[in-house]
Image (tube, rainbow, N blue to C red; front, top):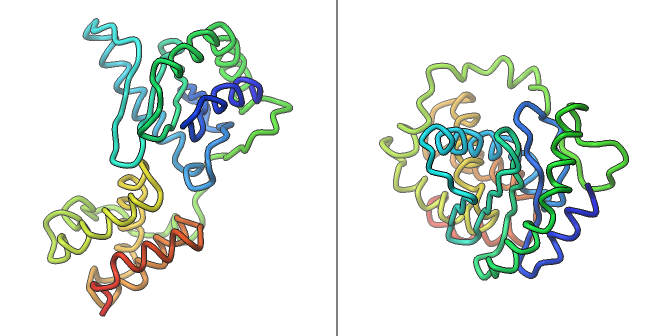
Length: 227
């Protein structure tokens, strides 16, 4: 699998890729660290899109998800597996499609192996992220009943959260919205959703960024809300 991921990453403007197989949570990818915790969730969401596509007989060969800072390309391998590639916005789609098209047989073989083993594949030296079991604190958190969408979009801090979201997306790219939503939900379980607790939320978001330079830029962009 490592050879396939390396070949795809050799295409200019490709940040990394992985093969998503429905039901296999041990994911092997060569994506930057900031994407690792969310790759299976992204794949599961794309699974639903592919299922709708199959049910409606739209026959879309590829799916393209555009964000301000990146583009995600999804190439279905079969009904339950896809190649998901994170790219910069300047990617040459023709080159990427040609490269992944030539790898179609190899991708199918890898997907079949992953499906049978239920793991990321033996012997791979690419970064591997296994879906983590919840900690005791997470398991005990009263997440039920928290409407994170209401907090983000209709609560008294909605405009602040929008600025946070914009700055956070600049820092970590296309998964920013999903990570922000999860982090705010966790933050909300720990106390009142108030301006006084915003520094705590900022520190939680910075742990997700996990890059000193990007953390500094993020904090500078939302500094006015912490005064």
